[in-house]
Image (cartoon, rainbow, N blue to C red; front, side, top):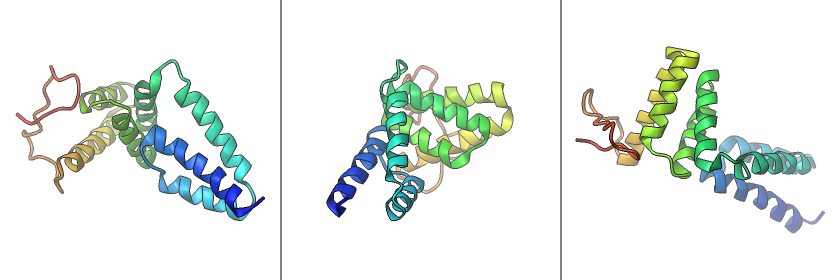
Length: 154
């Protein structure tokens, strides 16, 4: 296989991650480098194809699918992947209120540690969106229950 063909195939995989998550996670970039170096790109292509079927062709749609991923990963206590899918949910059109609803559901299904992880992730994402280095002061979060999308400060 030529280097150009290998590069095109690898870029196709990267494009699928960009489409669903808005970025190529560093763990995926690492896997792709290993796959290229050891002639195992077909494995990554198979994973990408399955992800495409499950995520893109899902009757749930991209937004709900990313929210489901976020909730499942909170319940499993998987910090880094949960962060990735929370960002993916925002990229797919979810709002902070949606993420909070998922964290609250994780509280019921997996307990306080899952909820705490979820709210930590949401606070960090909100602070990053606001351009702040730290989250808002206690009591200043301004979550409005009537806001169907992104929460705003009062």
